[in-house]
Image (cartoon, rainbow, N blue to C red; front, side, top):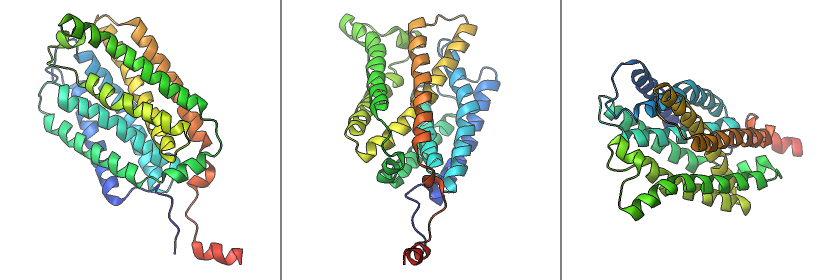
Length: 289
């Protein structure tokens, strides 16, 4: 009889869903980047879409491919990386499905939204959070908690500094008005999901609850990849001659760097025993005898 790997091996359904996600993501990003005039959005939105597509194609797709391979062979590091990148793609294609102007890939965005949502939820349910906590051991959590709280404050400040003046003045935030949108899916996702989720993750981690460790590593991956996407967007905006907020780029650049460093530290803290083949319980019992 073989012992469980602690929930670090995705089931066949999740593997197939991830393979489908990779195929559709490659199609969506290649079309978006290389088919002239494909996006029908306002000019102010186009550099953001190109930047998102570039980061997704060059970073997220290889990371998801490699992490799926590692996760299939029982790697705890591979499993949590697979979950984190899936979470990034869930956020990305939720914004595409709800905010991007209708185009020929609309059903692809909806399919990616469903695939990543079902895979992410199923993967989190399957994750053995207590085993993840044990594998990290007695690593100091102060920097991880502090960073998450700082992220909550910074993102809340950036978005509320645009939203509150518009509410008080009875106007529309410039980022929404310039794009010709009825509202912003990014505001809703960040303030309604990411910010409270990060605050809860910091609270759980501070109290050393197992799911605090699980959500921390997944959020670090999401923050690092999304921060990189924002920086890629800024490059396209500069090339297009659009104004870029130096303060916002400084904030997102710092967030990306710090989250990446903390992510590396977290992965190094995961014990090597988390990547070993499963132990045969019969053999283990005999050796103990």
